[in-house]
Length: 565
Image (cartoon, rainbow, N blue to C red):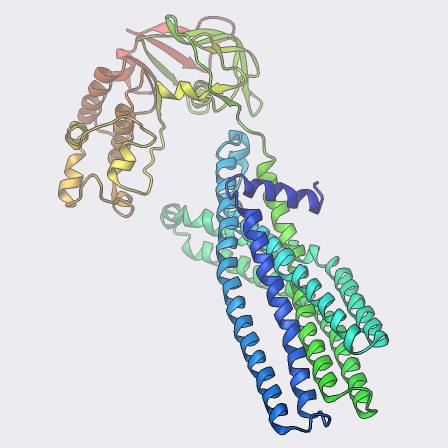
């Protein structure tokens, strides 16, 4: 487990990778905030001068006294206007600063997660992931805000106040003021150390609620088909009640800690004010001194409470970024940018063994997937067909032996250049939010005219969707695709694959959602556009067209391909 300093530095370097002006912006904000602190300290001193000048019996000339008071009053109002203007300038700039930090951590979390090994991804609950990322991205910004825009300015303001008090009031009160402030700060740190477990309890309750909510929202059809709406609502009601209870009790414990701190500040405030009244009544303080000291006490009491609140929350923020850290520490895919040379085959298995969840998929497997062939992979559900495909795509890695793409060993790493010539259409077809064009040209750098794209859509009997809904290639289908049939979604995915112009096309049940006539038409188009096909299918018509077949579960230690009929 990383220390808080290590966690802070990790996220700081992470943000700086894309927000390269973070240090400049942080220092600018700090400068503005320090200037605000200085003005805040200066205003009570101006007020002291105004009060003392109005009571100064040594100034007998009424005109001189009036002019002096007027000058001080104008100075006070000018400083007040400058203070408020700078405060809002700081607020505007800090909002920009914070959103940059938040956005960069969200981006880094996303780009990191999609590079994680598939076994880690499959174990990750998306509801918990979303909560952890949202909390973590906000948390780190708040930590920086607390350090640079709360704690440091308050420390500087405290030092300035101490300097003024020491210079104008005296050493004894300065020592008392300093010791009391330091005591409150140490008390705050002690209370904060107890709050970490309370925040953890709150976040776990939030994760449980988010996990259940997202899982059930994505399963509404199944809930309806089972007639279990009331059952699920009842379960969620209990989860929400548990969430309310745990969050309330967690916040209650945190609130009690804050009350202890506020009481300490209150005692300090009351004692200091009583002392000031005593010194004023004994004529050791002028009226201006009383105004100055009381202003400083009140002025510093609020920041002390603010610091304690922010430090308490910072403890929770560190819990948040620690939870987010596990995603950054997850095992990653090894992706390289290495060229390869192709001979008469694309893939070659050499004594490969491969297990999934303790089930042996391949053992001492030797096989080549040849250029220009149509290979069908068949077998019963759960026999390892999709796992075999995952090896070809670099998603999973072999346990032993060697797997080659051309002359490139991809047993432990995968070259991103391989994706330039292969395409994959999964069984569970997908459509992303965006336009028609963005969907069919997803991750595609090739250039197509509108006429060419429309022609392909017509071949797959999809152009009618655009016509019937009066939309163009650049129209959003964010809402429309929810009403697509399974066959339409599948054909959109096949169009996407064809437009990538791959040398190798890997298909998982490509015609499962199509009727026999459309299936034949679609597959004829595919065969005319792609030379090498690797297809998982149970369709007799496709199996008959295959050059070779792989039947799972495989026999051991021999070439297992059968010739197509």
